[in-house]
Length: 151
Image (cartoon, rainbow, N blue to C red; front, side, top):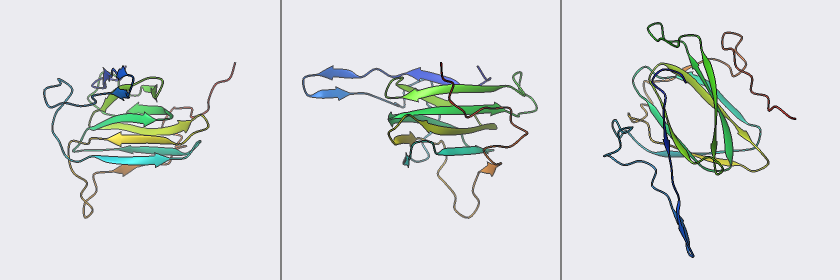
């Protein structure tokens, strides 16, 4: 696992009405600070990558569909510098994923249904000075394969 990445297993509490699933609480050890919340709808096969932040951590929950998350550690002072990691999350793996400052990240919607991703970043988005540093999803500088393995 990339240094500083955290995962909280989420547990749906089901009954005859459906289920309730807590995602993030201020008394969770994974909680740092509330900045804002937003939802992103993503069509199957769409890749949203790569970017990192210098001032905020992202906390993701995929509440519908499934996504393949790509992480790449380019931080100079990290013990996992140069490592990449894939995490699969969504309806069949209910987790909250904390992506630390400085780690490149992105995701691809997998399967045949759109995905809904909730983000609870630790800072609100600043339209005048966005804390987003981007490279293309297929950058040769990031060793990550977005393809889905069959068989």
